[in-house]
Image (tube, rainbow, N blue to C red):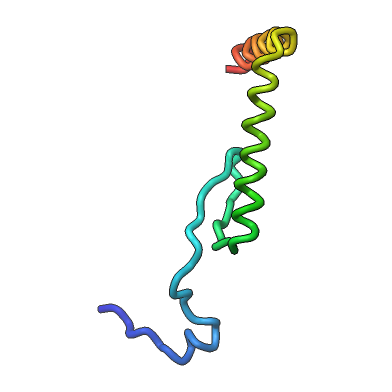
Length: 84
């Protein structure tokens, strides 16, 4: 039979977290904790994403740059195939 939980001992130890932030794994396997963001931070992230998309369009329009990017991507793909 299970032992009843000693509530006073749990309070002394910090107790359980009622609403922990959801945890996810980042691109590189690092643990990323998502925290609620305020409106200013959210607005900054939106503007940053918009600038990134605009820059991506500039790169895609530059034929010479895209050619170099494709060559580098093909080279990297070859290196990865050797590892796998």
